Length: 158
Image 1 (tube, rainbow, N blue to C red):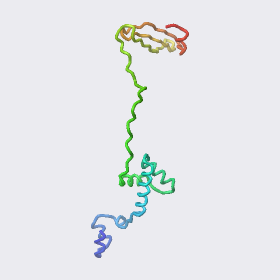
Image 2 (cartoon, rainbow, N blue to C red):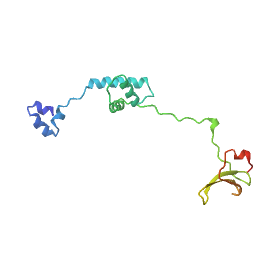
Image 3 (cartoon, rainbow, N blue to C red):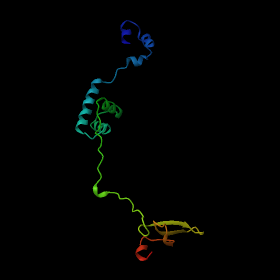
Image 4 (cartoon, rainbow, N blue to C red):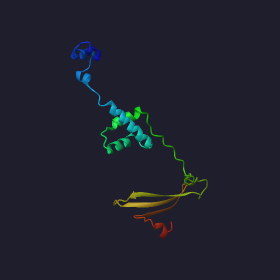
């Protein structure tokens, strides 16, 4: 484009021939020297703080008085090839193993209890504590009350 203008063709005609606007032709980028300084600063901060990502680096730059957009920091971050180290999987502690539920293999080995709720004709809530044998699916006890306290098991027998 500038070759055409240097040959003596008017700027307007050259821009129409190439298909760009005159303002795009006249545009001067804002400071490549500033970008190199900013890149050096970002790379330095990333080396100093290995666990920081581009967002935190942006916050540090802004806190230090630099007027910088996070998208520009991201672009420089990618161009410099900066990445965060992958987080390693944490190994499980030996004492915190989750055990499988006990399997009911014969009568009376595994018992479960469940709270069941229902409503009366007068719209009051009935609460029922149901105790089951897992193997036979037999219901051994049902306790029905309007209110079952948490201390109920201490004061009463099932």
